[in-house]
Length: 233
Image (cartoon, rainbow, N blue to C red):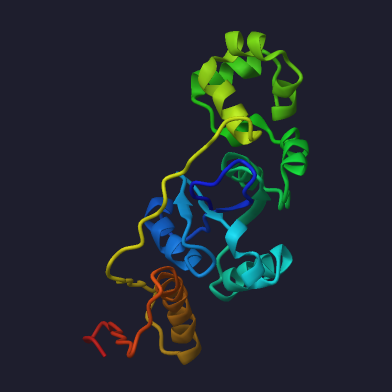
């Protein structure tokens, strides 16, 4: 997840879990991410965090990633994590499905070479064109002269390649944490077991905690409303 970082900043991307439609769930996941950094950015299919300023708070990158994984496990959410030196590289690596940890630009560039071009989610006409050229991964693009590559695949892909490699600045639009936090969770079936309700509560408390952290806020009381087929409890 990432927001306007310079090319040297570290960013983490998490492909969204299977929890309803991605575009419905991503803002909730972004609120949860606020516990790690207020600099959160939403991609079409991922949440990116600029974590460079948060590493000391969590005892370094390994400690932060351990906390993230523990949070996701507690919420029973599956996400693909990746760490990279640029926002776009983090997104491509996360889409690749490989838990890549590339804390600097050199490691990021090395790991990008193996990323399949399907992770770039190219428009269908361009995807067919690069396939016809025999290009299958980012490394295939990197070995070609840039001028000739631009003539084949067009300038937008060249610009994306430069952004992913840290050659071109890639400012991101920050997620705006809402003024008021309201979340609801619809369970797939009637529940009569307290542990299931507690699990659902964790799903709601996690984004609330992130939202409070990002806004430097606190709460004095919490109101829970549990709906039932026979009326609210």
